[in-house]
Amino acid sequence: MIELRNLSKSFITADGPVDALKHVNLTVNDGDIYGIIGMSGAGKSTLVRCINMLERPTEGSVLLDGRDLGAMSKKQMQEVRREVTMIFQSFNLLMQSTCLQNIMFPLKLMHAPKAQAEARARELLETVGLPDKANVYPAQLSGGQQQRIAIARALATNPRVLLCDEATSALDPKTTQSILELIRQINRDTGITVIVITHQMSVVQEICNRVAILENGVVVEEGDVSQVFSQPRATATRALVFPEMANAESQGGSGYGQLLRLVFEGSITIDKPLIASMAIECGIAANILGASTRTVGKREYGYMLIEIPGGPDELAKALKYISTVDNVAVQVEAEYRSKEAEA
Amino acid sequence: MNQFALAFAPDKLEEAWHVFLTEFPQGLWETLYVTLLSTFFAILLGLPLGILLVTGDEKGIRPLPKPLMKVINVIINFLRSVPFLILMVMVIPLTRVIVGTSIGSVASIVPLVVAAFPFVARLVESSLRELDPNIIEMAQSMGSSTMQIIFRVMLPESVPSLVTNFTLAITTILGYTAMSGAMGGGGLGKIAINYGYSRYKYAVLYLAVIVLVLLVQVFQSVGTHLSARLDKRIKK
Image (cartoon, rainbow over all chains, first blue to last red):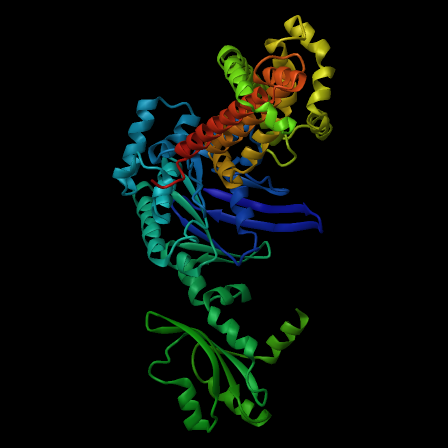
């Protein structure tokens, strides 16, 4: 189990101190595939580097099964880094070494007998599906294959935690799929805990069971992936889950009506098309500016930004009508406008 | 006919050819061993120093006290900025202590090493700095010690670049040997100066220059070829 307690990290830059992480509290259970998602600059990379102490937290602690990593000696830390290994966006293979030598690298660091290290490396080449690449140099491999070798290398010391720092961000969608599938398979077979750092919601959706959303160094939302996906609460989460809405909001409609945001929280709209029935029953022709919804088990989750033409009377009528529909919340967009003005 | 053309008259050429056959083998041998030994010692001193410049840097894997790094840098810059001709004279006492004399081919190795090792240190520094910092981070994330990062990551990953830069060092040192040859050292430089400058036998001087140029060409081709062959990033 990994616990982050009140973790903060600030950097001194030319423009003064920057708080990359602010009082982060997270718990990752054994066997989890835990996603940490955020836009670039949210502090994801700093967070993952605090977990293996590549970055020393300014405040707070990282506990691995109750052991405080910050209090460890250099020697103990080297031991821990065999238990908590890492793969990277740029693979970071040794370009002058063969694939086999790359996988043996962490074993050589701990002075493992050569024959034993080589046997383990060959076994891992099988695991990642590249048994014929033992004596090939990384430059001759595709990106996806290089990441497979990096995964094999990260697994060489039989770690209990695998940190993936944007591990699929440099790969095309199809290769991403296959790498994620491999990670999931390893998680299933070995019970290894995986922490996935990414900016792609699709990655979290694909393999994670839990997720934390990071914005400006703060965890704004945390929980089971299905729950966070179906009912995102924080603005940052909504922007990640429904990226299309960010565009619609910035366009802002014709300006002649009132903007409404409809939030579908598991409503059953298949039987009763909301906007169409509102037009028929109330005579209000709402203009749909943007919509982003997901259907999870016949229920609708998501957002819709609509414009109600006319004045306050029409608005009241529309609000009254929508309130009769179950599991749809309405937010009057003026509220959002003022938020933007603040920003 | 002008003096220049006279210097290449048939009889002069014949004389030059005679010098070539009698004195050049010895000169070539001296030039070669002085160059190779000087390069060897320059790398022996310059390689660790270059590594130190990178690892001991503020952002390096094992930062050393800033004032210490400053002093090292100033010393290197000082040695690099003294003209070789002056440096040779400056290190005469040191040469006497180490070799016992300040004259001859062996003695000329001392000033050559003193002049070349700071240069080599800078070359090593630049080679190691080319390395992707992400690779170092990877090694740290796997629990490498400082020494393991240096010997298992930094140096092996920089081999092609180091070979290229050592080639540059050896050709530069070869050029310096000609200068030290003129200042009491041996080798082709000595022959060129003795005949060409002191006795106006330009044909001999030009012949010596041609041999030196050929030597540089050989070293450079071997170095370039070796570097490319060692580089596993190149797809074959």
